[in-house]
Image (cartoon, rainbow, N blue to C red):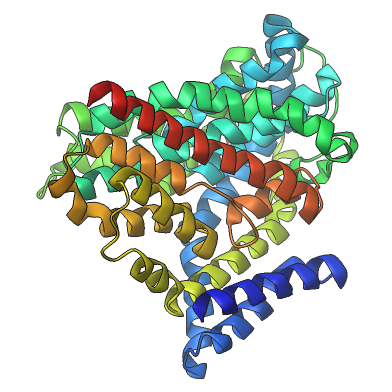
Length: 451
């Protein structure tokens, strides 16, 4: 019954948005209410569940998103994005621009939440695409592939790190196996898939994305724009802070959070938390891309206000997606998926991947899908002798599959690249599914080699 209600709910949501042109945020909340009723939730708890879903989704994300959008706009308005784009074009040439984007996204994605990575990279991707006169989606697909792979496969991302802890896997092994699988996966789902997508969804590449989401694009004289080094440092400042924290915890504390942290531990943990890292980075950006570029307070304030306006509806849509996800969890859809596999004799690696895929399709959240799947297959680990590090990647790859209307990443990709629902399904959803299958194939191949 939960799956029937879920299917009807998703069809209803698609009809509201595609057929009746409903505002996406309103459609998500309305669908969440009706699905909650259909799942038999107590009526008085539906509103609470929706509030918790929006709050849980936007809690830290609103902080990170807001600061990230302002930082990105400061870099763009000061000419930093222009400097980065022209330098990358000159260095790599037009034929290798996708490789440049993949490398940048991979480095940024290693230390940042998926959503933060998109916020920081989108203005640069737009600027490079406009300067090089290539379709923006031509660079957007490799960016999305690199960010998704780091999100699903590689520590120090929250989901892979948490799964490794749950399954008792060696984080170093997870990182090593993850990188081995990630490199071909990013190439297949990024540059290679973009060429295929251009043939079967050509209108997605010829369409004009909404540039208002990253502000007005204008040309700068090299003399008035900030240097490449300062522009990159400003853009990567959050990454640097989070990397410092990660390296410190791995080297000093051996990857284990101390029960009684001293003052240095506390300071390092504070500056590496996404919200505070973005705040510190924003303060640096206000100097580097503001005062240092001889901008006055009125100009800086205008940039900040434009940045906040550009993400207002996007934040509401992501919150609506969180409300829908929470209704599905509280309504018992996640538990129903888990019950399907009790007593199953499927290979543990395939089982972990499959459960993560079903949870991802049902719930939307890759992190929730991964952690739930890990809890379900953990008892099998002691009986089968499967390498826990490979199980982490199997579950992580399954957790990014088939992103659709109940996933925040789906709406971010759609809104930023100004795509229709159909175009987003044929590009973003397919891209994520390719990553999931490549991850599974890679895990099974490594399992054959090492066992």
